[in-house]
Length: 170
Image (cartoon, rainbow, N blue to C red; front, side, top):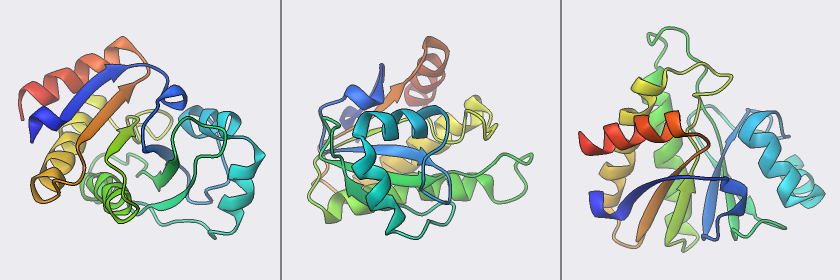
């Protein structure tokens, strides 16, 4: 399964894949960081479709078209805010990745790119988020051969290094 997981550094809004995940907030109406960048790149049609979804619970996901993005779909998933690790954060974070991949499978996506969910303003420690994310992805791929590649698209070298280390230890 690990051979179907890749770690790259880049801009998730420029990736030509079937689906990209969006580290959204529960309103799904845009925000800062990755969420804001995806909404800006996709255009106002994305926000219009998101308004029809009526939000999303932390750890779950909803899907929209990609509009002006090179990706066909956007998988919106609100990650957990870090409160020290005792408020189900690992379980909720793993749920984000699993829920996105379930939707990707349902919509016939073979390639899926993820940002590092919850490690920005939500404060999830990168060294804990990376292994949680990759373990959830690996476990899903073991049961789902229809998804041929999942990539973590890291915004900077430090994030990429954390995911490279976590992948090497899977």
